[in-house]
Image 1: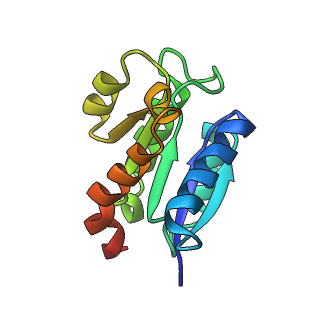
Image 2: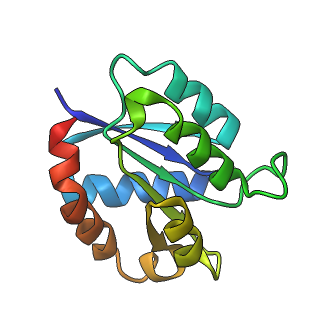
Amino acid sequence: MSKRILIVDDTKSWLLFHKDVIQQLYGDLFEITFANSANEALSIVRHNTVNPFALILTDLQMEMDYEPKLAGEWLIDNIKNIYEYSSVPIVIISAMYNIEHIARELNVECISKNLLINNKLLMKFMFEKLMPFLNKI
């Protein structure tokens, strides 16, 4: 059974970019599900508590419904309140200048889109860092 990843971004090209990078690095090891918004992602997560995703990758800036929080912050806060997802790693992938600060505040990992676009191996390094957690799911 392949491990499942949820990728959340409101830009289709980024969803496909992340999927392509993961498939280039790991082939079919991961089953990938997409969400186009924080709201859609939370709905998907809530419907997948029996068999949780092994990893969630999310953008920060999506719909504006959650101000003063960013949509990705709102999503992460809500996912962390779901018991079955308490040990599921979350990675913010965003172009925001303060991504590291936000990731620290939320106690999650992060990758800058600006760096990832030029170095796809950053995804591999992050997956290797998280592999002990991914193997527990």
